[in-house]
Amino acid sequence: MKKLLKEPLVHFFLIGAVLFVVYGLVNERSNNEDIIVDKEDVAHMAELWQLQWHRPPTAEELQGLIDRYVEQEVLYREALKLNLDHNDEIVKRRLAQKMEFLGNDLSTMVAPATEENVLAFYEKHKDNYQSDYVYSFKQIIFTGDHHQNPMVAAKNILKEKENLTAEQLKEAGDAFPLNFEFTNVDSFYINRELGDGVAEQLKTLETGRWDGPIVSGFGVHLVYIEKQIKPKIQPFEDVREKVTADYEYQMENDGKEAILNELKKKYHVIIKSEAIASKELAQNKTE
Image (cartoon, rainbow, N blue to C red):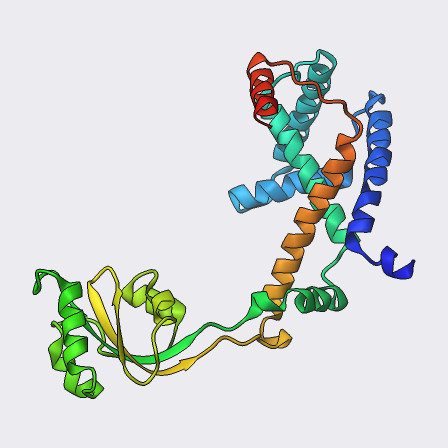
């Protein structure tokens, strides 16, 4: 039972009850016609003024801010009484967004990024925190500027001179502005220098001999891999910040989904559309 209570998703299902309490309090407050501007409200207005104008407001300016706040509150409440928010897409979107923000805040309360929670998340998703492939290699290139068919040219050179050393084969390739030799570079660096997908192709090549061809945006390459370091799971301390960010993102999404599913239970959704009905009918016939 204790283990079950520690599960964040179990807590998320309880958030629905909290939302109902909040809803009740809000409704109760809305029946009160008093408009209260407290010290926190005034301080917030002054802070926003300071951010915009880089100085505090004068007493007269602050009174103007308060007057505008009261006017907005009066108009807002009267608009609600007239049901002016009904079918307003902008209002719907904004209120839905605020509900999502509320869910995010509750998720943070239910499953905070404590050392225990983050470490448990890391243990469960270790494969996501592997280091990258690292290579040391030499390469030569064959381009369309110098060969009618660069792929055939590369294959012919490989077949004829595969036993040559890296330095001996260097002159067989075309002139190339980038490096002939790369030392201890990861997949990100390789793809940045030679183009997306090159690092993935290197995984298919053998070490200690000329191999290929592989293709980049520059042309066709033959590659001599001297060293390949395969990925390994990184220690928790080395990736703590990334794990924490991933954990918070996951909890936010899980919480949002759990709360939304719980709230949906309050509603019976009826879709009246001939287009939808015809699609459902077609699917049923297919099945």
